[in-house]
Image 1 (spheres, rainbow, N blue to C red):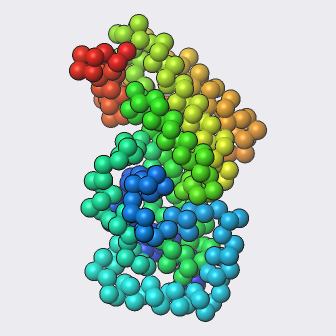
Image 2 (image 1 turned 135 degrees about the horizontal axis):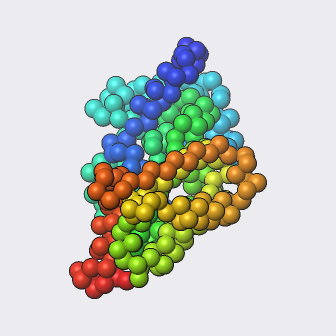
Image 3 (image 1 turned 90 degrees about the vertical axis):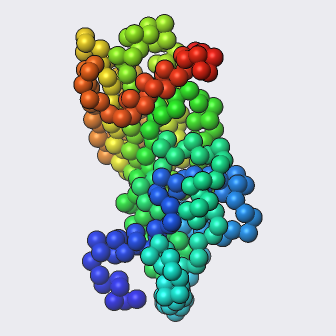
Length: 306
């Protein structure tokens, strides 16, 4: 154990990441958690999430156990045994993955939260219990320090209630939330001023929906991410020939920071990038997806959503 702790931090991070991998992509991590807390998994599944995502204030007993050298060494030995006897050892260190976390179920299980894939997610798998018991507090800290929550704010814009209800899952269950201790947030905002220029009668309602989502995400940041230290915002828009819609961009950022709070903003490291393209120029796939969504919302196939 002492020999492992003496390895360079960068190497330990890589080892932790490999040991924490599941049999499904990181884009399914939050879906798995949402499925679990909403009863879409088996009742006898292991409580992996509570131990790997609980806050530092709530898990002092676990930390004491992890810091006890004898217990930690024993847990580490058991983890080694699991690796030697498990054909899927390259996916995880620790107990066999519970049914809800196996690839054949997580990726294909049809629940309302299948729509979260691509909408929001995290960039790494959370550490399993065995890894935490073996190596203690450092595992959680490194996970939270290096993993980002990402949200594609305007994906599936028509599903107003679903988006709000999903964010509420994290707000109302903060004590067990996988995002509570995360330090990094990546926000992607996609828009098409060009599309709305050709549908002037829809501009007001669509922009109102955009601003509502921005406010909902900002409220999540303000109430449920107390450990956040960095926000990266990327804003994509397909312009009209007349140029970018700077007025809307400013309204979006103002709504966001008005909700988060400017005192909080001063404590955060923030980056903002804007990408504007002209009609006919290549644009971000998220913008193309949004335009397709807009077309569906006004199309005859759904009876004319708006």
